[in-house]
Length: 108
Image (cartoon, rainbow, N blue to C red; front, side):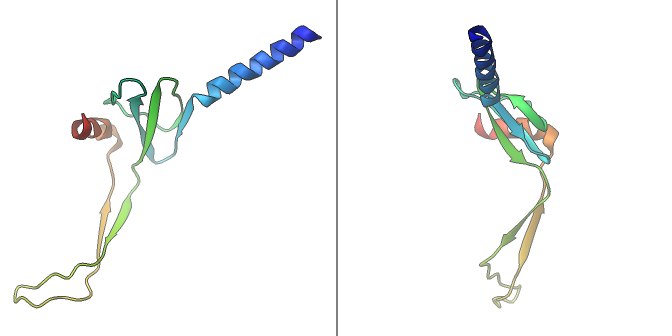
């Protein structure tokens, strides 16, 4: 009975160790790989799902369409009259296939 106990306990420890080294990239996102030791950022993004991350960090980046509201603007028209109630909403989305290259160009 003792060997079975140790075998089960060892199996659970191995399973817990593997799951601790996993990262999830949610739907609508891509993952950017960064090495934990060297800081190297990979140019190839990770797709959606679970990934084994024993020696890397996986930074999830949202690629869905995002809206950002700009407030506190008081622009002037061509005659120099200041406008009071101006609402600007910027809509953007990221292209997942080129994101790893753009990320590395801005950081590396």
